[in-house]
Image 1 (cartoon, one colour):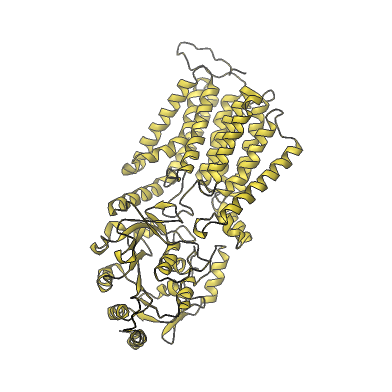
Image 2: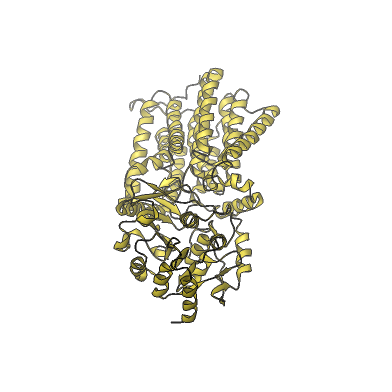
Length: 623
């Protein structure tokens, strides 16, 4: 074997600890191309979770995963990889470490490369990396880019290292060698983490902990995802450090995993199937929504009798896209999504038509209230409907795994604005207390750190809702009210940050972490992400809505509450796209609610849907 002398030297250094009575090592096994569908039988009794392979970029590589594990925060590798690995005494060092640091800094992500290796070195107890793949050095390197003790794969190195009293062993194990490594580390605390999953990381990976780790034999959860059965690459380093009782560096963005109920391998495979299917159909479903919106706009422009049923159908799609996650549509792929989502949308549209048979405003209010309520209630209960939904967050490559996504918050804000505007239009000042309460509840559920955690949504919602509340009597707020809205927005953001910054780093929002790190980097990262999302299919809805409203030419001169709502929706779309990394997708979500609602709320005649025999159109009733 190459470097056999180095292996012997490493083992000799470990051998000096034999008989010292110190705890036996904790072992972290890093396994490429591992998913729960094909794990070896040896992991059956381990505590289990799916591992999202998301790093600083969507299509992560093995090298990206190693760097992210070693950093304890999202990272990725430059195009040239990690560069040359050179011997340095008993260990190795990365010759191009400074280039890796510069590249990592350009990502504007929290954390610092080499955090895991530095923390293990600070314990002043020997530990080692055992690997075949030189890229694995990136997971164990310290802040100087070196690993003090390395053995290139010899199973005797694992076995003797186990017996030596080392603090920890980080073992890179290709899938065929994983059963051998598990036998050599039997009865120890062993963590197994994927560094890639099949099909170029289109699947979720594996994270498992042996019974000796004290985490049970069922499920695992992470504060980084706020949900059982799903952990992140950034959680691997803090979990290992917690197991060896080494203080956690503050730069780590992840958190130690904790036991949770459930967690069968079968359930994790089903979750992986849902995630994979959701990723495969999401783009096609977004394009389909844009196409249906365009066709619906054409029908509404050309056929007056089609306006109400088409508008109700378009408004029913956003809430249906989240409610469909309550049913196992992913078993049938794209066809299942169309059947289940389309069926729910048709049901919601039919119910709205029934409710609004005498006044279409009631049907519009019902649908816009439904989409706002679905998103808000889901945010208050953990955001489960957002995960892998067509307009939600991806569990395989998303940047967040809980709360309200940017598109979802666009639906929430627009739905609240329209339904509250209708209330103000009908009842005036009497509706103000209820409207303010509804808007406050939406802000709390959508942006609160414990719920939706969408800080960008707070920067969007406060000004937009202020425009509506202060301007419903005149059509637009007075300058003094603009200043009051701005002050309330700043105060709300500072309050959220003050509360959030007291929480554990892994549970903080990105804004709270930025206040203690690199606010400028956060802004740059969001701008770059927003620019990358400019071609999102839902952005096409903006064009559809503008064309539809241009043909319809809604006149709201005598409807100040609706005119204020139009300004509020404009503010929500513009600010939402400016402050969120989803970019124009937020404006597309706002427009998806705004254009069909305002098409019907225009003062010109619309068809009566009560009686099939009544062929004369009637105007929308005014209060």
